[in-house]
Length: 100
Length: 188
Image 1 (spheres, each protein chain N blue to C red):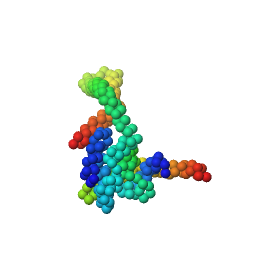
Image 2: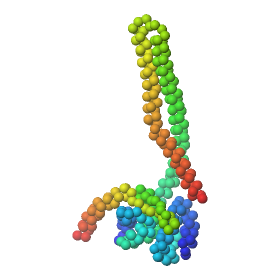
Image 3: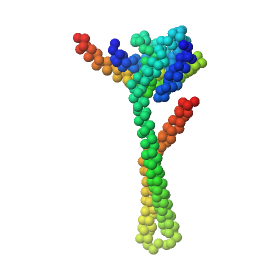
């Protein structure tokens, strides 16, 4: 897939990985890697951006006597995912035309 | 390279870029490495796969939104300096107006109270000649009351108007304190 397309989708992938459960960096990366390859240094700016934009929020818990940062999707994040549903329909229409 | 060496190298590289939140980035990679080794991955291999610290920092710099934000920050610094001066002058003028308005309202309020009391005392002390005298006294009492209501009304209106301004003052003081706290944390 085109890298530009991938970039846009990765943000949504990260949000989608938090749709049902809060999670931490390593786990998010593993989850997304099942579908699309993502490196740690790609994930970090995305998490940071989504956090700054208010699509997710963070909190810390103690795990194995060290601090672990958890990411939690916000209501705005859920809305953004919903928005991607209508985007998908639009893109699908275009692809139906391209691949007809 | 082990975790500590990697983090030290990353910190060194990040130090060259003052606009990147070093602690946050270090925390992220530290947690990643520890989680990977907890998950049975080899620490050395994992760190090798992270790539060079130079590349990691370059990636952060390349992030378009990130760079935009840094630019915004620089513009904001200028804006803040300007707006602080404007704010100080604004607050001073605001204070002068509030003070004079307050003093005027208090004097109007007390003259209203004074007129009412004077009229009542006068009404009881002296024997008014006829119904017109009572009417005049009644009129004076009404004027007194309207002065009281007017002053209270003006003060109330002013506070309602000033409410957002007061909030802004409170917020900017709050932000100032928070910023100081953060900077102190960074220096340590």
